[in-house]
Image (cartoon, rainbow, N blue to C red; front, side, top):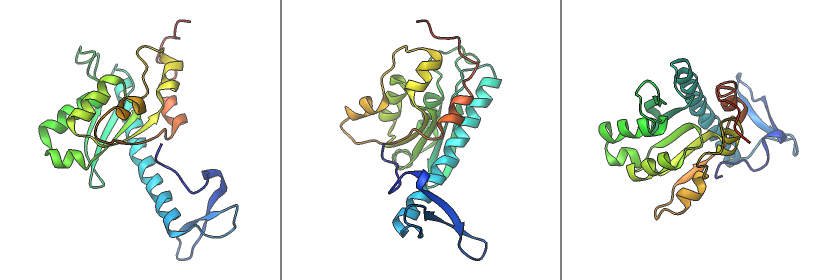
Length: 197
């Protein structure tokens, strides 16, 4: 995981900073965070914002009768594309949120836009999605729910952590996550049949 603060989130809080603004303050040190630490805090908030969009897309996919997964492609800080899982509505077991998103991206964006984009997903991607993301040009990805957490709810079918898969690639892929695990897990509760023991 490449995302991180200089110390755990539990040891900082926001404090008034004048003019109605707030700044993170270290609870351990009792003084404002350094500029570099503040940039990491802001970056984390931005990542959480996009991750929440994927969780909302997952919720919409579930309402539509599909598996609860969503994905967002962010190019230059702006949402360029969104996708949901459509395995049932498309009658296609490969129509995962990430593969649907990559199909759109390959069709609608330039290779340069894809390479500098960040793919956000509501859950750590499966092996199939990792392959399509890599061959489609994704070099930065953020996920919410870890695959191990999903496996506890849905079963351990073909579970390979994306870090292992991307780690075998020639080109480096930056991976951040998990983020917002409780929120990401909530959309799956009650959806999956209990896994067989």
